[in-house]
Image (cartoon, rainbow, N blue to C red; front, side, top):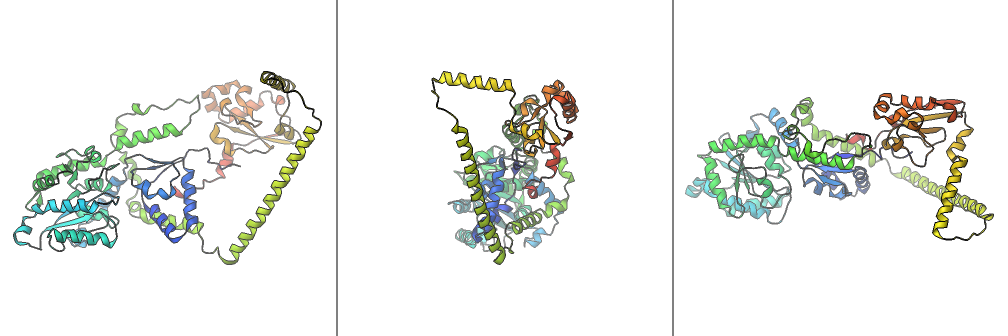
Length: 534
């Protein structure tokens, strides 16, 4: 039997980087068999969908050419909601920030590239005029704290940030580097203001900037096309030209007054939080609709869904948040832990430590014996085929080939004579001597892998267009014309197959006993190989 879900379209959506981190560990530790197994799973999917352009790069080791990016996901907004629901007021104290401290978080692109640290240095330089007490008396006990939440997690980047701050004459301890992998949500939650300090063009809206808006923080960012698409200057955020960083200083002086946020900053943060909660909903809905339009094949009698342009405005306006109410808060808190436990379980199945010593030797010997048996079997099959061809050619005589038109006419004449003689195929001949024949009603190509191929079973197609080629299947509509009507076919279901056989049964059924078995009986016994990922 074929792999049962081969004809079922599979769309796999990936919204996190946990597995990508594991794949890097497998490669560095030499566990190539685990990586190969994951590649097979990724290859099985018709399409692997990512919500941004960062994740496909992280999963590049398993890229089978079926990656697709549909921007937009409610994941970030939902995670922020869950984080705010369980958070307490002690987060600032745990991160060594006083209640009166004004925390500015500088975020950047998730991709490391040459010049990222230089762009952050320009932003830090533009922030100096915002802190007049530094230029007056060099006070090291400033209420302002700057956190650079960008770059890599290695110590070299932290040293570079400290060197930049020292050269700009920031007091020691005022500027701190935090790797994005370390408590990003907590750092953004304690921020008073967030600045995006990457000037490189982005393919999708930056995730850290989106989360900052979801937390209700005022944002300041360069006027990159992808950011300008969703951020209106002075409405739900503030933009400055990347060619003139000095404008950032003017914006900061408007937003910060006497160590506190101005009314303009609070208003922009409120509007930005509402905007970020349903950001890119329209792009996501239309993207998935176009994707399904291209991978799903519908029978001709089925009414096609509406075009993407006819999708109502309401589903594209906001995420269906009521569906998230059934998800418990504790699940969202332990999601990463559960994902890691799933990956650990799969890793133990694919790479058990017990497969050593004698077990490995036995497996090697079994593989060797199986290969010998396989070669012997292939040789016997080739000999039988050769012997049969020799017997068929023994009594034949050479005939003039003639023109192509003559050969074509002779072939058509032979086909007509074969149909007139009602020659029976192999399956029908083998089924003649059996006391039982089991009919398997089916509808559509998606059920083919669940049908049996032995002579004990015989397929019964409920639609003429969905029959298997090369099989001795019965055409149900030709025996019961009522099945040509989609309404009656759907109402009768598999009972229509019973009536089709009962109608003039002596003309088709020659066995002593008759049976019926739905293709669903086989489908229930088969589980998909990727069940553990659901």
